Length: 331
Image (cartoon, rainbow, N blue to C red; front, side, top):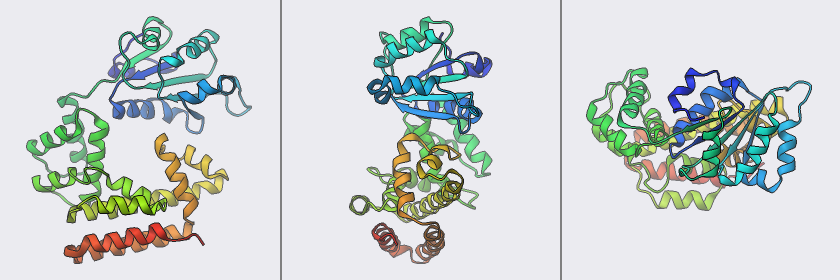
């Protein structure tokens, strides 16, 4: 059965066990899965890549049908689903597993796709396309973002952000995250600032730079620093992104005490860590101890103040700090 994405709020989601979300709007799919489904399952979520279930169908079926005394309900998310999954999903629909909700997350599927046709035809399963956002929906997201932060913004600035998002709210959310890191305690933001911020690191994002530094991927870190000409505003975004990620790692460290496993802690952490980021977050946790993270947060705040006071050499200060931490050996 076909539903438009906004129609999902009008149905009882627990009446259906199978959902297919397809399309190029990764941001919309992430929001739907997180806000409508994941929040109801908490620690009862299993994630698979399509290749995993194709390579070992029996293990996947065991994961679907095996229940524990404490966990009767479960949410299973299959990423990068294609037509190759159709036979397996068709078999599962016939078996109709109880208390199990299965979501397929797919890229854009053509009309002739057998997986898409199967979901469209069957009335007991849901198919929802997630196409590019239009200017109206992106405009609403931007207005809500700045209104919640009590920052005034012109329509010209909104139009620039819409253009940079290329029709995908995930791209837009990435740009808004940069602005959020930069605009702490600011009540206004200029056209020049927006233009510079949304041009940050055409080849690499601030997040990628910080991730590789914390993962101690020194060569990649140096490459990113060398291949980008960071502005004064960029330097502030990068150091604030570092502080934000350090605080998240510190929270996960506290979570590990209850889970006894880094992998388990990363998988069940809230808000959820996107599947493609889990590997590097795990690598970071293996590289840093809790006290080291606390110390680095303190030093990062000092570096931010130092960069602000010495903006002309801000990039040198930041680069030295980033590289030194990417090289730091474990104790």
